[in-house]
Amino acid sequence: MSQGKVLVLHGPNLNLLGTRQPEIYGHETLDDVNNALREKADLKGWELNSFQSNHEGALIDAIHAARLDGTLAIIINPAAYTHTSVAILDALNAFEGTVYEVHISNVHQRESFRHHSYVSLRADGVIAGLGTQGYQAALDAAIKALRKA
Image 1: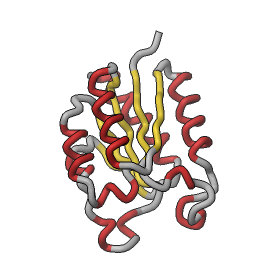
Image 2: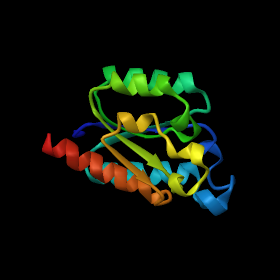
Image 3: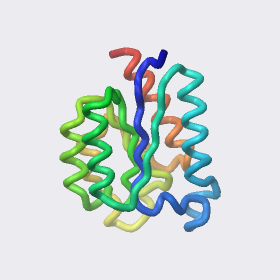
Image 4: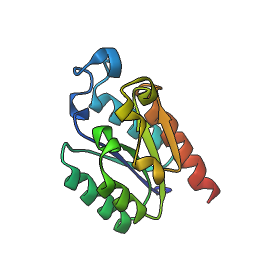
């Protein structure tokens, strides 16, 4: 029996992970990231689901569904929506579980418009600049926080 559900959301262009700007985002594919997360979650007794979309509304719909399906934590890399989406922030504000924001690159070393995150206003933690290992760190943090709760 699972200890709980974790949802990993990947925003726009992350379907191109491994091939788009590998000098910034690395060579791992999104499948590599998701498989490694699922394996770690399984070993720790957690159910992990992942979803990627290039469409803001689809990500919002996934957050809304998580409110009702027993999901206890969301790990989200909102990608470019980080800097623009009040709608994703509002959806996350309606989610009562734990939220961790992940960015593969160090957004603070990049263009100034990337320094602001709407999602950070809701996130329990933000991990940036660790490459795809940031997802692993977020999963560890979410599981630890949920075990304490």
